[in-house]
Image (cartoon, rainbow, N blue to C red; front, top):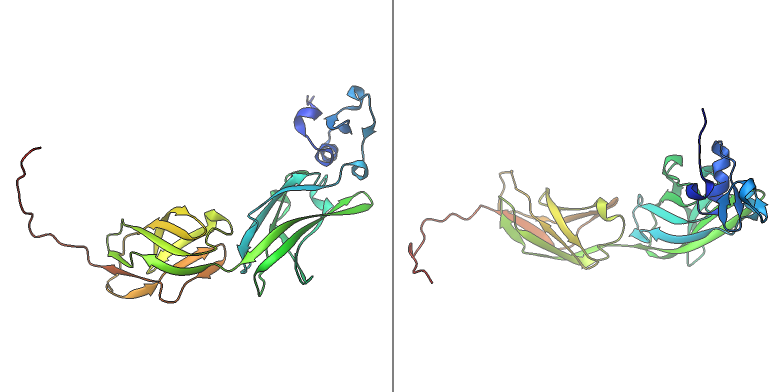
Length: 257
């Protein structure tokens, strides 16, 4: 079987280009592009030791709760020619204490361009430095980016009550509410999921769901789930009440405008 390929179309960074050779391709790095040796009129690099230094372009999210379990997506260039080149990802506090950010697995690795790690829990929030150690042949390079651990808080809910049939917009106020992975954020009102409309750092808007229990008029703490952190606030409670009942409408006729 014959496979046609264009090295330059496959990869755009040195280490990811050379990583293609591990799966049967014959690409090399030539004057800032991936090529085959026949197309190269400059120095043809075939070892990652000669590649540019690793670069981190973005860390998403770059803020997370102090509880463990936030998946951090690290994007950049020359982040290894294979998953095994990623030696370690760690988080270092301003005091110099380091904790390991657990690699999420080879299936999450994007050749030369993407690494995923899962944060550990820490006792106190604050500014950290996320460090990635990449093996390049006999050389280990370190590249870093900022990350912060924060403790989300709830301070208010408006309105503080609603009908059991749900369907009303509820706004939960607080701080650090947009940290972590937004798709892993949820709100419970008296144990009922509140469908999220929007998330900002100071408030979350959601639409209340239908309450199917039998205990009405009981104030229960609002709970926010941000990754693996369960967040509630003193006095931040929501009450489901019986739906309003209408007996009459007056007047029953109006004069058209």
